[in-house]
Structures are given as structure tokens and as C-alpha cells.
Image 1 (cartoon, rainbow, N blue to C red):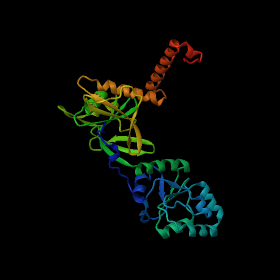
Image 2: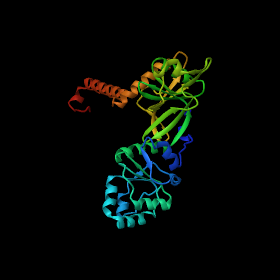
Image 3: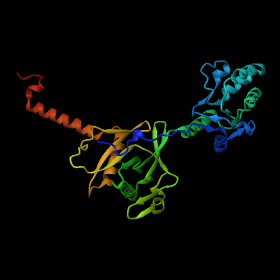
Image 4: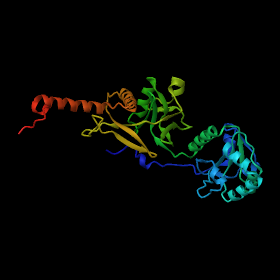
Length: 338
């Protein structure tokens, strides 16, 4: 059965870099950053999301030094440099300057040592300090950079939050995706996006959200453009949602074989993330909205470890086995028929 959307052929984008200038002015208040070098030093580029604490490099081991990452000087590194003395610090940074980094950040409002500043000024590398604690700062900065460098794409679909389950609706044009989503919103569920869904992979999570242009507007054939937020209120919308299941709406095809048991789950891969998929044949009079709610509740059950189809299958097999034993007393005693 061919997919309406081949997710494996989505055009996936990634940001290649983030200029330290943009980073500093975008996040300086949020991260409590203070620039310790001239503004002209902000011309470097951040090229990956991971951070690095250069303790081993400062101690002399530079064989696997991840110098291309942002360098974080925490309390441990700062006191090591403080205890090393002026001459030793000069040796350390004379060695380190062969490995240029995009940015150095000192936590706990620590002041940079003169030797670090001298090296960075010579190479036009920015140095910042923050009042934040090291782990707290690193956690938030890592999340910001992961969001920036995360792979992303967009797809023609609708996304709605049903009982806390993110359901991505796909299907050919005119099959009734928007109408189904509108009915779900009227029943108390929440619209994330209609027509165009922007997808972003954050760690193991696949997040969907609407485009800035469309927002929470929907196009309903025969009615036109409606603003769901203004019609139904703030409770009917949300900005983003993790996608837990893909629902493909298909026009009913005579002779097509559709899943009737749920014992053979279908999955689709979106930006490297494996997502469960349900195919619903659409025919006149079929209540797709109620079926959608059942899919959401069944997904929640599976998340708690309850697979109804598998449990029923085991119950059926036990029943058949019990019936065979009653019909064949020899089976109960382990005797075989000749």
C-alpha cells in the first residue's frame, strides 16, 4: 500500500553555523552573559551544539581536544589555572592557542586570567562571563544550541493534540483532514497546525508546529479561512506538540486490505524518528473524529504497557488451548494419541 507522503524523501534542512555575534545579542540576557573582549571579537562561528570543558587540555592532554566547541571554564578549571601560577598559565595558553575555539565562557562571574585574555585578543576570539552556575548554564545553553542545529523539514498535513497525544494527519487533498481536525477542536482538543506542519527533531523527539504565517488559521472548503484561536479561545490551540502517531486518511478502496486486529503495527520514519502509523479508510457516514479519539486513547494505553490487541490474542490462544484440553483428556495427562 503506497504512502500518501513518502517521509523518507522529505527535504531535510540543518543550520550549518551560528555566528557568535548573533548568539551573544540573542541570548545575552537569558544567559546573563557579559562580554570581556571588544565587540570586534564576535566574528567567530559556532558550528556544533556540544559544549566542552577543557580540563584535560589545560593539564596538557590535547590529543582529543574538541576545540571547535564552545569552551566552558567552570569552578574546577578556574581554580586549577589560579593555582598554576603566572608562568605555568603562559605555558598552558601558549600550547592551547594552536587550537582556536569560537568562544570561551567563564561561569560563576569568574574573571578571565590575563593569559587567557591575551591569547584570545591575539586570535580575536571572544571571552564572556556569566553569573550562572556551571551545570545550570551548560544545560540551558546546550538546549538552545540543539534547537538551533536540529534537523527540520515541513509537510502538508494537520497536527492536533488529542488527549495529550500528538496526532499528525496526512492524506490526499480533499480527503477531510481539516474537517476532522476542526471537529476534534470543537470536542475540546487542541489545534497545533493545519495545512503546513513544520517538523523539527530534538534529540529523540519529533516536534511539530505551525508556520509563522498561517498560525492557527484553517481553510474549510465552502466556508473559507477561519481563525481557530479567536473562534474557540486559547484553550483550543497550542504552539507545538511532540508527534506520537501518524494518522493517514485514505478514501475507501474496494478490495483493499486494511488492518483489522492491530497485531501488525505500522511505522513510518520521519527525520530519522520511527513513529507509529494508523491508516483509516474514509467512507460516507464514518465518524473519523471518534475513531481519532480511540486511536489517541489506545496510544496512551500502549505507552503504559497495555497492548489490547496482544492481550486479546493471548486470551484467545489460551481459550483455544483450554478447549483442546477439554476435548482431549489425554493432553492434560501428557499422553499422546497413537
